[in-house]
Image (spheres, rainbow, N blue to C red):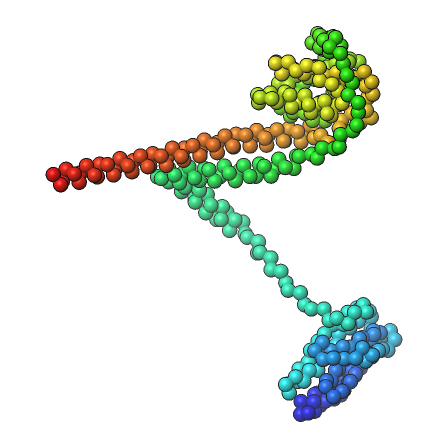
Length: 339
């Protein structure tokens, strides 16, 4: 009761203040459990509800000020709540949402961003890492040097694999078509004519991409067969992979695969040139070249990793042999001393 009496006196002092009586309105609602003072800006409806005490939903007040006294930018919907918990008087400011919800929004925690480093700090950080790497490279222990190179190569391998995933184009579902059956005589005739003719398509380091399939359809305008020459086919079985991929993308028939990395493709008896000659599920010329470079780098990196792993194994074997040799020499010295 004493706390409530102090609260009333404080509220009366606010009401006597001309700043509060001229610009704002204070409503005092008193019940047996709590007291609420609502401060409202003009031309705004404020819903007052206590956050810590139970208030009936019907107990709402509408506050209106004088017309056209203040501009809209001074409008707000804030409430001042007088709490008397444990005989201690406290004022609390709460915001009432403009929508129908009476839930008081909580204050969000600020996310602290990392302060930007100056140019000098960045240079010093890079210098520290370079000196650390240089120390490992010039270490007298060969195991430290090999392990540093191995970790660096493995990090590069993971980075290259992530890069190559971007160039994996999802294959479109195969369109249904009837493969034409050819007799042995027809196959022999097409094979001979394909070898004699000079028209050809080159598959270079980029591999099979949209431009290769486009060139096939352009050759099939005037010729039934076309030769596909694969130049950098160093891997075993790579020519047959190219032949299957070209047959799938162009809907042609593979007549022959020669040992000199040459494929003879036949367009078919019922050939109809498609509207889009370059398939959608293929890479462009530039992207195919980028993919080839990443693949080549990955191949060399994997070979380098294998080489380093072998060196590490040989070093461990050498350490074991050297240790055994030392143990044998120590035993011999002991035997000689005992004699």
